[in-house]
Image 1 (cartoon, rainbow, N blue to C red):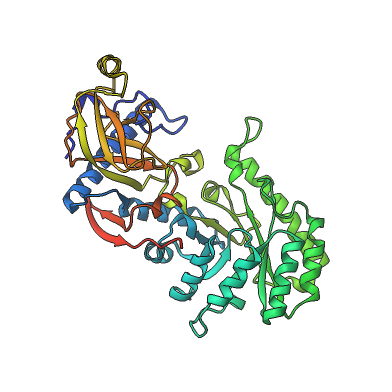
Image 2: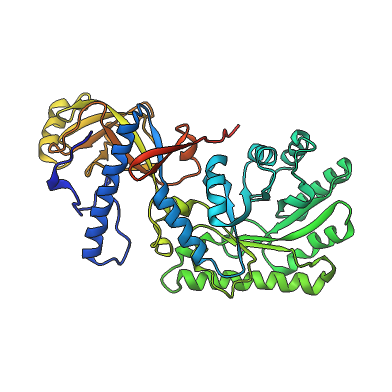
Length: 430
């Protein structure tokens, strides 16, 4: 087990291997947070060691996860549902752990194979597509859907459409297969990633739905507003979310004014996302808010709106080799000199795997060596000479995101009270 030198613990000098304090946090609070992180990292590393894990593994702190779930649930505006974003937590076992605790209404799904798998294995969940699917993927879903499994796509599945052309493709498939498709319309409320750009642009889509009630049913709107947390200096995230909501209201008002027959009390007005879920208040026009990654809070979600949530996800990997100095091919003497002169470059360790979408965080001072290069097989990392490290010790990384990284290391290890107590099988992406 690693024994970091006490002089390096909690050191606040920013480096590629340290966590960045939340902007605006007073120095004393930042130092306390760094010490808390160090203690957490040590405990999570010990959990991996005690579990006898000998390959890269992803750890989820269930105590922190539970606390994050509770905070999000309490922060959600009254009367609004929460929808869990499946791609951010691609494990049905983990989803089944979270959904009842979060009180989530259903899932937002982004990948056609997952759509079929969850319809079969978890037919109780309502599913809303998080991006428009090619019509070939829609067709494949119905080809693979097993009848009699308890999932009713006409009632539980909302396909996302963004253009009249895509809706026409869906209609042609529905007519050919004698299906009734629920369609949710994607809106652009400022993200500029496609979707209907203005209320009047709804006209051809809703007219097409109204003309074909046997095969199409309008189920609502979906608008993602994560760009709001990047608001420039002359605005603010809260103001940007308010502007997104005002645009959403305009779409709703247009639909009700021009197609009242299509409007019913079960319409789903979905929005938000992990970065902005806590910025929606009681005046939001949304009936439900989507989120996922914030519950485990990878690095990309270190934003002010989620300051109350704690990181709950780490990647652990064993040390394979230790060199008591820095060596780089062709410039060995210069590299050794640099290792003696540069703080943090005193020794080299080669770890099991690498090139992850993650930042090294423990022990303090762990950092990449870009000059040597990255490797997905045995990545070279540097550590200060004072840090005691040996083969088979564990180093920790904090993923920058969850959706891709969680698919890379097999079962997710649930840690509670410093012990691995549960394994969550990860869903295959194929």
